[in-house]
Image (cartoon, one colour):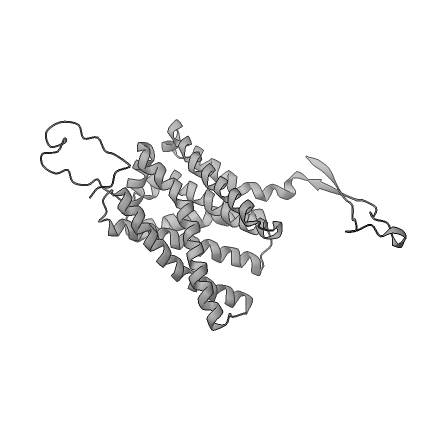
Length: 285
């Protein structure tokens, strides 16, 4: 429960006779609950597994596959980009919060999907905000401009993701068309990200009382929006593929987006009395 943290200051180079290279150590009593706030978001994930009765099925463990994939992709991106550790801590918090938030959303999609229209959208938004906001506690428990910016990131992330998914469903006619859905999702994720980036720039400028210049602001919106869209699409992609190939999570997709199967044409297997096998990976034209 308790530990001793020892801090020893050292110089970047050997000072020779000018002074010691390493100072005296200072001990600090470290208690386990000082970092307990970082566990809150994982507790939310565990509760999403355990509490809903519909999740008391071994098939639910498949959701860990896309969660592991997006985390591995994030680790690879950090390594390839050479991201400094000071920035990595902040981006880790934002990414981990978004990834766990999307996972929890899939775990409860069949419950929230019972509602229709704007109520369902608000429920999904509320779930994402509650879970992702717990990620702020793992970074800082004090309210400041930095935590406000984090909250703004999560708000625009949740809205962009849900708007893109909703519009993609609408432009698919509310029917199950995997390939067409993912293509529409590319378009609406980019467009929604550009709009969200405008809102984010305005929000951050108000929070920090610092406004970017006109050319700089345009580049931030255009390039930042594209990077934001790519991040959201890659984050969402493994979860969508899981729902296409796994019947258990395909039901979650149908419930969450109120999708329906394509009508079966006359003379098909179903119409002739033979069982119709739904190919989750084929596009319905």
